[in-house]
Structure formats: C-alpha cells, structure tokens
Length: 288
Length: 258
Image 1 (cartoon, each protein chain N blue to C red):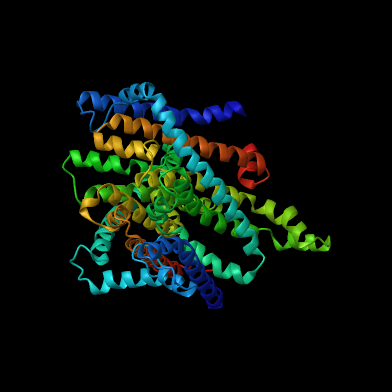
Image 2: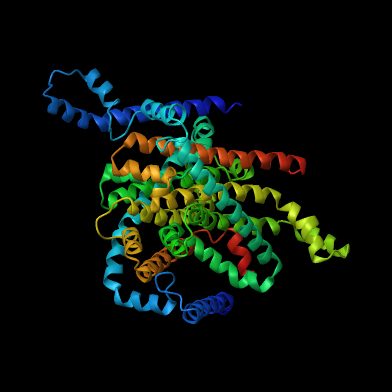
C-alpha cells in the first residue's frame, strides 16, 4: 500500500493537467461565443469558468464527463437508448461471447502447436505475420460478409472480438506449455509417462501463470474488437456506436463518457481475470 | 547460415501456398459470389489494376503512421528516462501506464479527428497516444534490468549517474525498448487505419476499406488489406532487423548462432 500516495499524486496531477488543457483549448471557442453574444466585459475568471462548462467543448472538463456519466448510467433508465448501461451491456455481451470463442480457439491452437512438431514450424511464422497485419482493418469486411449469410446482431461483432483475442492467448499459451525445463520433461520420461500424461500433469499446470497473463490481454483485446466492430455497424447500439454518434453530432461530452465507460469495462474485465488468476496461482503454489 | 535460414522458410512457405490454393479452389468449386469472398486470383488482378489508387492510399496513411510512431515512441522513451530518476514518480506512473495500456485507446480516434482535422495529423495523434504507453512501461522495466552487480561495478568506477545511464542501463534496456518498438509497429498501423474510419480526406487505407465495403467492392478491400499486411510486415521486419543489429549480444539472438 506504499504505492497509494504516488498513485494518488499522479491521478491528481492528471486531473490538474486536464483542467488546464480544457480551459486553454476551450477559451477560443468561448471567446467566439462571447463575441457572438456581443459581450466584451467578461473577466478572465469568468472566461475560465464558462469554458469549463460549455455544451460542446473541444475538451470537456472532468466534472462534465463525470456528471454526464452519472446522468447516463444512474438517472436514465437502463432500457433507454440514451443510457450507457444499455450500450455497455450490448458491448459486454459481444465481448464475453467473443472472448470465450477466442480463448477456446487460442488455447486449442496452442495445444496443437506444442504437440504437433511440423505444424509448429509451418504455422508459427504465419501466426506472427498475422499479428503484424492491422487486424482491425478487417472488421468492417467481416461484418459485411457475415451479413451476407444473414448472420446479424451479436454474432459478427463477437466474431471480431474472438479474432482479436485469440492471438495473444495462443502466443502466451505456447510459451506457457513450453515452460517446463528439460529436467522436468526428462523426469516425466523416466516415469515412462505418455505424451498426454506429460501434458496433463506437467505442461498444463506449468502454463497457469502464462494462461492468466494472456487471458488478461485477450480480454482487453476482445473489448477493443467489439467496440471497433460496433463503429462499423452502429445501428445495433453499443459503446462503439455511442462513440460514432457522438463524433457525428459533435457531442464531445458524450464521446468522453462512452470512452470512460469502455475504460471502466475493460478495467473490470481485466481485474476479474487478474483476481481469479491470483487466487488460482496462490492455490497452485506459484506465488513466490 | 543463409542455407539454414532458407530451409527455415520452406515449411511456412509451403503451408501458405497450400492455403492460397485451397482458397482459390473452394471459391471456384463452390461458386462463392465475389461479394462474399473473392478468389486470390481476382484480388491479385484488382491489385494490379488499381496500383495508383493503392499507392495514394498508402502514402496518406503512412504519413500518419510514421509521424505518430516517431513522436509516440520518442516521447515514451524520454518520459521513461525522466520517470526513472524518481522512485516516487515510477511507483505512481507505472500502474497508471499499465492501466492505460489495457484500455481501448482507439476510442479516442473521433476526438482526435475533431481536434486535429480530417487530414493525417489527427491519425498521427491517435498513434502517438497508442504507442506512448507501451514504450513508457517497457522502457521503465528495461532500465531496471541491469543487475546490481553491474551497477556496483559502475559505482566502483566512480561513474556519474549519466555515465551509468548511457554506458550500462540504456544498453541493458534495449531489448525491452525494441520489444515495445515491435509491438508499436502493429499498434501504429491499427491506430491510423481505425482513425480513418472516423473521417478523412477521400484517400487513405482506412477510408478505402470503409467506402469499398459500402460499395460491396470486396476485391478492392482485400487488395487494400494486402497492402496493409505487406506494410505492417515490412515495418515489423525492419524494426526486427535493426534489433538484431543493435542487440546482437542478447541471449535470444546468441543462442541461434550456436
């Protein structure tokens, strides 16, 4: 807990910088607004306060974002399309489905790569190459293609979330399943353990820390995938659709609120995975 | 050694060929409409025909990618070195940086488009934010990686802080720095292309993808993706090659020679 003070300081500093930046960025807009209203008698303090409370600022102040979030999460009923809970739940659903598929696929691929020698040599370079491709660029097309097959709604977005999350999981799991050192593998051989026994009793348990580390990355990636997919098919709602709508109509406060909601969602998801991971690693005796 | 490297390339190359052949075969045999999945040959034909358009898109996008990459990685490196001076800052900033790295940063794209306009500077801005934090976190971790033995040695030489930094800790951090540089090549491409979905002049890879999807010009989308894939791989390969040159002493490269 000795990190508490430094973290608080940094957060406060970020807030302070944000306020200064918001006031500076919005001042010009506010001056124009004054000029349009025919006012010239404003003081500097007035200018600052007003630029932090504009309706469509370049950069809203933190309190504006906070109040927008309170309004759209707590006040507005969750069934309304203006509620962030409504959009957040849509995004969460896509993320979780996509993450589950991506995790299953990622782990399956890792198991195959580790156990089949020739696949490792021929498949791994492609997996790495696929990672240097801006995968998100495929998102709009996947949505359209799946649309042709009458697959609409959650499925296309979950597919993109899965596509984005499987790779880090595969890489992490391959590393994890290879974590046992030669000594331990030799020991298993002296026990004349079969390949599946070695896998279940040595490789799989050894990979647990890698598993949770890659699941954390995979969860975050799945959320990014869901949000980007929502941008390309925004009529179904979701936080990404909210971002797009905000950018169409210049509703900056709304964009920032959606952004923070997405950030909170991501933090919660990663946090849950991390917590489960820490408990499991503790039970399995990985904690040093 | 070259022979060995070539031999390493054969299996993945063969698998790629098999994959392409299977793709072509499935599309032709099942008569898959081009709107859903064009055959590789159709994509290649489209690619050859529209080289000028693709080149224009490439230049538009690469401007944002490179400017953002250099600024983001550069500032991440500098801030990491500054942060490293103070234990207090490090303990406060690192959890923050880790949190931000897990966030869906591409979401700031619409905001950046609003601030910096439709042209490439707004894309560069998104790339700066996306690449900054991985660089910061990795470099700070890398600066820690010199062992206490080595640090003690520097102390017995009566080296100044600056000398310890340039002669020991920065070189020791290089593998971490290059790790971030490599991750950031992909992030930079993604950031620039996604930012173009939110508004751009009528050129750019992200723009091309989103409009051609609207026209159902799927072969053009694939051609653009091919360009993006080649660019991304080349960018990554370039950084990886530089890494091999600069950090040849690192265990992960040494072992391969033996």
